[in-house]
Image (tube, rainbow over all chains, first blue to last red; front, side):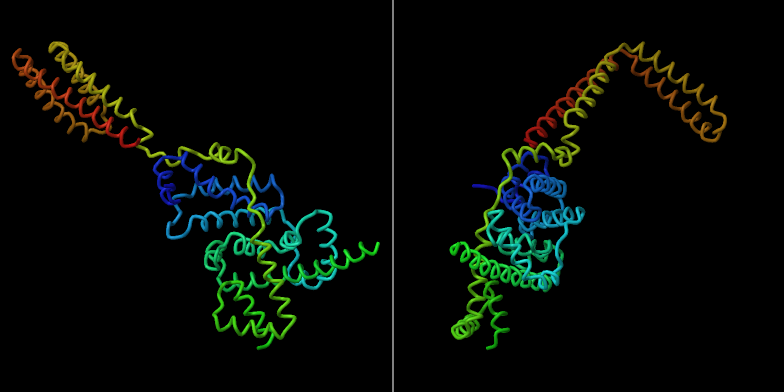
Length: 192
Length: 190
Protein backbone atom coordinates (compact mmCIF):
# COMPACT_ATOMS: atom_id res chain seq x y z
CA UNK A 1 0.00 0.00 0.00
CA UNK A 2 1.55 3.31 -1.12
CA UNK A 3 2.23 5.93 1.51
CA UNK A 4 0.48 9.28 1.63
CA UNK A 5 2.37 12.42 0.69
CA UNK A 6 2.44 13.55 4.31
CA UNK A 7 3.96 10.25 5.47
CA UNK A 8 6.72 10.56 2.87
CA UNK A 9 7.37 14.19 3.87
CA UNK A 10 7.73 13.13 7.50
CA UNK A 11 10.25 10.47 6.53
CA UNK A 12 12.28 12.99 4.54
CA UNK A 13 12.29 15.47 7.44
CA UNK A 14 13.54 12.72 9.75
CA UNK A 15 16.55 12.21 7.49
CA UNK A 16 15.49 9.93 4.62
CA UNK A 17 16.23 12.43 1.87
CA UNK A 18 16.21 9.76 -0.84
CA UNK A 19 12.45 9.36 -0.33
CA UNK A 20 12.00 12.72 -2.06
CA UNK A 21 12.36 10.81 -5.31
CA UNK A 22 8.88 9.37 -4.71
CA UNK A 23 7.44 12.90 -4.44
CA UNK A 24 9.18 13.89 -7.67
CA UNK A 25 7.77 10.85 -9.49
CA UNK A 26 4.24 11.62 -8.30
CA UNK A 27 4.21 15.28 -9.27
CA UNK A 28 6.70 15.68 -12.13
CA UNK A 29 3.95 15.56 -14.79
CA UNK A 30 1.76 18.16 -13.07
CA UNK A 31 4.64 20.53 -12.45
CA UNK A 32 6.27 20.11 -15.86
CA UNK A 33 2.96 20.46 -17.72
CA UNK A 34 2.18 23.71 -15.94
CA UNK A 35 5.67 25.07 -16.62
CA UNK A 36 5.58 24.06 -20.27
CA UNK A 37 2.15 25.61 -20.88
CA UNK A 38 3.51 28.83 -19.39
CA UNK A 39 6.95 29.11 -20.95
CA UNK A 40 6.32 27.10 -24.14
CA UNK A 41 9.89 25.75 -24.17
CA UNK A 42 10.92 22.22 -23.24
CA UNK A 43 14.36 22.92 -21.80
CA UNK A 44 13.24 25.96 -19.89
CA UNK A 45 10.27 24.04 -18.51
CA UNK A 46 12.62 21.30 -17.25
CA UNK A 47 14.97 23.79 -15.62
CA UNK A 48 12.02 25.50 -13.94
CA UNK A 49 10.58 22.16 -12.83
CA UNK A 50 13.88 21.19 -11.25
CA UNK A 51 14.09 24.55 -9.48
CA UNK A 52 10.53 24.09 -8.20
CA UNK A 53 11.22 20.65 -6.75
CA UNK A 54 14.41 21.88 -5.06
CA UNK A 55 12.45 24.77 -3.51
CA UNK A 56 9.79 22.34 -2.36
CA UNK A 57 12.44 20.07 -0.80
CA UNK A 58 14.13 22.96 1.02
CA UNK A 59 10.78 24.12 2.44
CA UNK A 60 9.25 20.78 3.38
CA UNK A 61 9.10 21.79 7.04
CA UNK A 62 6.72 24.59 6.06
CA UNK A 63 4.24 22.22 4.40
CA UNK A 64 0.93 22.14 6.26
CA UNK A 65 -0.81 18.76 5.86
CA UNK A 66 -4.15 20.53 6.27
CA UNK A 67 -3.82 21.35 2.55
CA UNK A 68 -3.27 18.94 -0.32
CA UNK A 69 0.36 18.47 -1.28
CA UNK A 70 -0.57 18.95 -4.95
CA UNK A 71 -2.00 22.40 -4.14
CA UNK A 72 1.12 23.32 -2.17
CA UNK A 73 3.61 22.31 -4.84
CA UNK A 74 1.54 23.90 -7.62
CA UNK A 75 1.61 27.11 -5.61
CA UNK A 76 5.42 27.00 -5.64
CA UNK A 77 5.30 26.14 -9.35
CA UNK A 78 2.96 29.03 -10.17
CA UNK A 79 4.95 31.63 -8.27
CA UNK A 80 8.29 30.42 -9.61
CA UNK A 81 7.08 30.33 -13.21
CA UNK A 82 5.45 33.75 -13.07
CA UNK A 83 8.57 35.24 -11.44
CA UNK A 84 10.71 33.70 -14.16
CA UNK A 85 8.50 35.09 -16.92
CA UNK A 86 8.43 38.55 -15.34
CA UNK A 87 12.22 38.59 -15.02
CA UNK A 88 12.47 37.86 -18.69
CA UNK A 89 9.86 40.58 -19.30
CA UNK A 90 7.78 38.34 -21.53
CA UNK A 91 5.46 40.58 -23.47
CA UNK A 92 1.88 39.71 -22.91
CA UNK A 93 -1.03 41.67 -24.32
CA UNK A 94 -3.16 43.44 -21.71
CA UNK A 95 -6.75 42.38 -21.67
CA UNK A 96 -8.13 45.59 -23.18
CA UNK A 97 -5.83 45.41 -26.19
CA UNK A 98 -6.73 41.77 -26.60
CA UNK A 99 -10.36 42.67 -27.07
CA UNK A 100 -9.84 45.68 -29.33
CA UNK A 101 -7.57 43.89 -31.77
CA UNK A 102 -9.66 40.75 -31.86
CA UNK A 103 -10.28 40.77 -35.59
CA UNK A 104 -6.58 41.08 -36.50
CA UNK A 105 -5.59 38.51 -33.91
CA UNK A 106 -8.03 35.97 -35.31
CA UNK A 107 -6.34 35.96 -38.71
CA UNK A 108 -2.92 35.69 -37.15
CA UNK A 109 -4.10 32.78 -35.06
CA UNK A 110 -5.36 30.89 -38.09
CA UNK A 111 -2.05 31.29 -39.88
CA UNK A 112 -0.16 30.40 -36.73
CA UNK A 113 -2.39 27.39 -36.23
CA UNK A 114 -1.64 26.02 -39.67
CA UNK A 115 2.06 26.76 -39.50
CA UNK A 116 2.64 25.26 -36.08
CA UNK A 117 0.13 22.45 -36.37
CA UNK A 118 -1.07 23.20 -32.90
CA UNK A 119 -4.58 22.81 -31.75
CA UNK A 120 -6.58 26.00 -31.77
CA UNK A 121 -7.09 25.79 -28.06
CA UNK A 122 -3.35 25.56 -27.33
CA UNK A 123 -2.73 28.63 -29.44
CA UNK A 124 -5.55 30.49 -27.73
CA UNK A 125 -4.21 29.61 -24.27
CA UNK A 126 -0.73 30.74 -25.25
CA UNK A 127 -2.21 34.10 -26.23
CA UNK A 128 -3.64 34.75 -22.78
CA UNK A 129 -1.89 37.09 -20.32
CA UNK A 130 0.35 35.16 -17.90
CA UNK A 131 -1.89 35.48 -14.88
CA UNK A 132 -5.01 34.42 -16.78
CA UNK A 133 -3.18 31.52 -18.40
CA UNK A 134 -2.08 30.21 -15.00
CA UNK A 135 -5.59 30.29 -13.60
CA UNK A 136 -7.18 28.58 -16.59
CA UNK A 137 -4.59 25.79 -16.53
CA UNK A 138 -4.84 25.31 -12.77
CA UNK A 139 -8.64 25.15 -12.89
CA UNK A 140 -9.35 23.14 -16.01
CA UNK A 141 -6.28 20.99 -16.44
CA UNK A 142 -5.16 20.44 -12.87
CA UNK A 143 -8.64 20.40 -11.39
CA UNK A 144 -8.01 22.84 -8.55
CA UNK A 145 -11.03 24.54 -6.99
CA UNK A 146 -11.41 28.33 -6.74
CA UNK A 147 -10.42 28.10 -3.07
CA UNK A 148 -7.28 26.07 -3.82
CA UNK A 149 -6.28 28.45 -6.64
CA UNK A 150 -6.85 31.38 -4.30
CA UNK A 151 -4.49 29.76 -1.77
CA UNK A 152 -1.95 28.93 -4.48
CA UNK A 153 -1.84 32.40 -5.97
CA UNK A 154 -2.58 34.50 -2.86
CA UNK A 155 -5.43 36.16 -4.74
CA UNK A 156 -8.89 36.73 -3.28
CA UNK A 157 -11.35 34.12 -4.43
CA UNK A 158 -13.56 36.73 -6.10
CA UNK A 159 -10.63 37.90 -8.20
CA UNK A 160 -9.77 34.33 -9.17
CA UNK A 161 -13.35 33.73 -10.24
CA UNK A 162 -13.57 36.97 -12.25
CA UNK A 163 -10.28 36.35 -14.02
CA UNK A 164 -11.18 32.79 -14.92
CA UNK A 165 -14.54 33.93 -16.31
CA UNK A 166 -12.84 36.63 -18.37
CA UNK A 167 -10.20 34.20 -19.59
CA UNK A 168 -12.91 31.76 -20.67
CA UNK A 169 -14.66 34.50 -22.61
CA UNK A 170 -11.42 35.42 -24.34
CA UNK A 171 -10.76 31.79 -25.23
CA UNK A 172 -14.33 31.30 -26.40
CA UNK A 173 -14.11 34.34 -28.67
CA UNK A 174 -10.71 33.22 -30.00
CA UNK A 175 -12.00 29.75 -30.64
CA UNK A 176 -15.09 31.12 -32.38
CA UNK A 177 -13.05 33.39 -34.64
CA UNK A 178 -10.57 30.64 -35.43
CA UNK A 179 -13.40 28.30 -36.41
CA UNK A 180 -15.02 30.94 -38.61
CA UNK A 181 -11.77 31.90 -40.30
CA UNK A 182 -10.74 28.31 -40.75
CA UNK A 183 -14.10 27.55 -42.31
CA UNK A 184 -13.53 30.39 -44.77
CA UNK A 185 -9.94 29.30 -45.40
CA UNK A 186 -11.04 25.73 -45.99
CA UNK A 187 -13.75 26.94 -48.32
CA UNK A 188 -11.18 28.89 -50.35
CA UNK A 189 -8.88 25.88 -50.50
CA UNK A 190 -11.73 23.75 -51.81
CA UNK A 191 -12.50 26.35 -54.49
CA UNK A 192 -8.88 26.38 -55.59
CA UNK B 1 -34.47 35.16 -18.71
CA UNK B 2 -32.15 37.52 -20.57
CA UNK B 3 -28.93 36.55 -22.30
CA UNK B 4 -26.73 38.15 -19.64
CA UNK B 5 -28.25 35.94 -16.94
CA UNK B 6 -27.90 32.99 -19.28
CA UNK B 7 -24.17 33.72 -19.72
CA UNK B 8 -23.72 33.80 -15.96
CA UNK B 9 -25.53 30.49 -15.61
CA UNK B 10 -23.33 28.96 -18.30
CA UNK B 11 -20.34 29.94 -16.17
CA UNK B 12 -21.95 28.37 -13.13
CA UNK B 13 -22.59 25.23 -15.17
CA UNK B 14 -18.92 25.03 -16.16
CA UNK B 15 -17.98 25.57 -12.51
CA UNK B 16 -20.23 22.63 -11.55
CA UNK B 17 -22.00 25.09 -9.33
CA UNK B 18 -25.51 25.23 -10.83
CA UNK B 19 -28.72 24.18 -9.13
CA UNK B 20 -31.27 21.93 -10.86
CA UNK B 21 -33.70 24.81 -11.05
CA UNK B 22 -31.14 27.10 -12.68
CA UNK B 23 -30.17 24.36 -15.13
CA UNK B 24 -33.77 23.92 -16.21
CA UNK B 25 -34.14 27.66 -16.72
CA UNK B 26 -30.91 27.75 -18.75
CA UNK B 27 -31.98 24.83 -20.91
CA UNK B 28 -35.31 26.50 -21.61
CA UNK B 29 -33.60 29.77 -22.57
CA UNK B 30 -31.19 27.96 -24.89
CA UNK B 31 -34.08 26.22 -26.60
CA UNK B 32 -35.29 29.62 -27.78
CA UNK B 33 -32.03 31.57 -28.06
CA UNK B 34 -29.61 30.46 -30.78
CA UNK B 35 -26.76 32.73 -29.63
CA UNK B 36 -26.77 31.38 -26.09
CA UNK B 37 -27.05 27.84 -27.40
CA UNK B 38 -23.96 28.35 -29.57
CA UNK B 39 -22.15 30.04 -26.71
CA UNK B 40 -22.92 27.07 -24.46
CA UNK B 41 -21.61 24.61 -27.06
CA UNK B 42 -18.48 26.65 -27.58
CA UNK B 43 -17.78 26.77 -23.86
CA UNK B 44 -18.31 23.04 -23.56
CA UNK B 45 -15.93 22.40 -26.43
CA UNK B 46 -13.45 24.79 -24.89
CA UNK B 47 -13.51 23.10 -21.49
CA UNK B 48 -13.26 19.62 -23.02
CA UNK B 49 -10.30 20.72 -25.14
CA UNK B 50 -8.44 22.08 -22.15
CA UNK B 51 -9.16 18.95 -20.12
CA UNK B 52 -7.98 16.84 -23.06
CA UNK B 53 -4.65 18.65 -23.28
CA UNK B 54 -2.06 16.02 -22.48
CA UNK B 55 -0.13 16.06 -19.23
CA UNK B 56 3.41 16.41 -20.47
CA UNK B 57 6.38 14.62 -19.00
CA UNK B 58 9.98 15.77 -18.54
CA UNK B 59 12.86 13.84 -20.10
CA UNK B 60 14.21 10.56 -18.71
CA UNK B 61 16.31 10.77 -15.60
CA UNK B 62 14.52 13.84 -14.27
CA UNK B 63 14.06 12.32 -10.81
CA UNK B 64 17.77 11.46 -10.58
CA UNK B 65 18.76 14.99 -11.58
CA UNK B 66 16.56 16.42 -8.85
CA UNK B 67 17.86 13.98 -6.22
CA UNK B 68 21.44 14.83 -7.21
CA UNK B 69 20.69 18.56 -6.89
CA UNK B 70 19.15 18.59 -3.42
CA UNK B 71 21.16 19.06 -0.24
CA UNK B 72 20.82 15.71 1.54
CA UNK B 73 22.34 17.04 4.74
CA UNK B 74 19.72 19.65 5.65
CA UNK B 75 17.36 17.15 7.26
CA UNK B 76 20.05 14.98 8.86
CA UNK B 77 19.65 15.31 12.67
CA UNK B 78 22.67 16.51 14.70
CA UNK B 79 22.66 13.30 16.72
CA UNK B 80 22.84 11.17 13.61
CA UNK B 81 25.61 13.41 12.21
CA UNK B 82 27.74 12.80 15.25
CA UNK B 83 26.67 9.23 15.69
CA UNK B 84 29.67 7.22 16.61
CA UNK B 85 32.14 10.11 16.85
CA UNK B 86 31.00 11.36 20.25
CA UNK B 87 30.72 7.88 21.63
CA UNK B 88 34.20 6.97 20.34
CA UNK B 89 35.70 10.09 21.95
CA UNK B 90 34.06 9.42 25.30
CA UNK B 91 35.04 5.74 25.14
CA UNK B 92 38.63 6.74 24.39
CA UNK B 93 38.69 9.11 27.37
CA UNK B 94 37.26 6.40 29.60
CA UNK B 95 39.80 3.93 28.24
CA UNK B 96 42.72 6.24 29.03
CA UNK B 97 41.20 6.92 32.42
CA UNK B 98 41.07 3.17 32.88
CA UNK B 99 44.74 2.89 31.96
CA UNK B 100 45.65 5.80 34.22
CA UNK B 101 43.89 4.21 37.14
CA UNK B 102 46.24 1.24 36.83
CA UNK B 103 49.41 3.29 36.80
CA UNK B 104 51.69 3.01 39.82
CA UNK B 105 50.77 5.01 42.87
CA UNK B 106 54.27 6.51 42.99
CA UNK B 107 53.98 8.00 39.52
CA UNK B 108 50.60 9.36 40.47
CA UNK B 109 51.99 11.04 43.57
CA UNK B 110 54.93 12.58 41.66
CA UNK B 111 52.75 13.88 38.81
CA UNK B 112 50.18 15.37 41.16
CA UNK B 113 52.92 17.02 43.15
CA UNK B 114 54.34 18.61 40.02
CA UNK B 115 50.95 19.82 38.96
CA UNK B 116 50.26 21.43 42.30
CA UNK B 117 53.64 23.19 42.22
CA UNK B 118 52.96 24.56 38.75
CA UNK B 119 49.57 25.80 39.83
CA UNK B 120 51.09 27.57 42.83
CA UNK B 121 53.65 29.33 40.62
CA UNK B 122 50.95 30.41 38.23
CA UNK B 123 49.00 31.87 41.10
CA UNK B 124 52.05 33.84 42.27
CA UNK B 125 52.69 35.23 38.78
CA UNK B 126 49.11 36.38 38.38
CA UNK B 127 49.49 39.64 40.33
CA UNK B 128 46.94 41.80 38.48
CA UNK B 129 44.00 39.67 39.78
CA UNK B 130 45.18 39.49 43.36
CA UNK B 131 41.81 39.19 44.98
CA UNK B 132 40.72 36.21 42.92
CA UNK B 133 44.17 34.65 43.00
CA UNK B 134 44.26 34.98 46.77
CA UNK B 135 41.03 33.09 47.06
CA UNK B 136 42.26 30.51 44.59
CA UNK B 137 45.54 30.20 46.45
CA UNK B 138 43.80 29.56 49.68
CA UNK B 139 41.53 27.09 47.94
CA UNK B 140 44.41 25.38 46.22
CA UNK B 141 46.35 25.03 49.44
CA UNK B 142 43.46 23.23 50.99
CA UNK B 143 43.03 21.19 47.85
CA UNK B 144 46.75 20.28 47.88
CA UNK B 145 46.53 19.22 51.47
CA UNK B 146 43.47 17.14 50.72
CA UNK B 147 45.21 15.59 47.77
CA UNK B 148 48.25 14.66 49.82
CA UNK B 149 45.98 13.23 52.45
CA UNK B 150 44.11 11.24 49.86
CA UNK B 151 47.33 10.13 48.21
CA UNK B 152 48.60 9.06 51.57
CA UNK B 153 45.41 7.16 52.08
CA UNK B 154 45.55 5.62 48.64
CA UNK B 155 49.22 4.79 48.90
CA UNK B 156 48.36 2.01 51.31
CA UNK B 157 48.51 -1.17 49.34
CA UNK B 158 45.21 -2.68 50.35
CA UNK B 159 43.28 0.55 49.95
CA UNK B 160 44.76 1.28 46.56
CA UNK B 161 44.07 -2.25 45.34
CA UNK B 162 40.46 -1.99 46.44
CA UNK B 163 40.07 1.44 44.90
CA UNK B 164 41.70 0.43 41.62
CA UNK B 165 39.49 -2.63 41.27
CA UNK B 166 36.42 -0.51 41.99
CA UNK B 167 37.43 2.09 39.40
CA UNK B 168 38.10 -0.64 36.82
CA UNK B 169 34.70 -2.15 37.44
CA UNK B 170 32.99 1.24 37.09
CA UNK B 171 34.89 1.99 33.89
CA UNK B 172 33.93 -1.36 32.38
CA UNK B 173 30.28 -0.78 33.34
CA UNK B 174 30.37 2.69 31.73
CA UNK B 175 31.86 1.27 28.52
CA UNK B 176 29.16 -1.39 28.36
CA UNK B 177 26.42 1.22 28.83
CA UNK B 178 27.99 3.35 26.09
CA UNK B 179 28.06 0.40 23.69
CA UNK B 180 24.45 -0.41 24.48
CA UNK B 181 23.34 3.20 23.86
CA UNK B 182 25.20 3.35 20.54
CA UNK B 183 23.68 0.10 19.32
CA UNK B 184 20.23 1.28 20.35
CA UNK B 185 20.65 4.53 18.42
CA UNK B 186 21.88 2.68 15.32
CA UNK B 187 18.90 0.32 15.41
CA UNK B 188 16.47 3.20 15.99
CA UNK B 189 17.80 5.20 13.02
CA UNK B 190 17.45 2.20 10.76
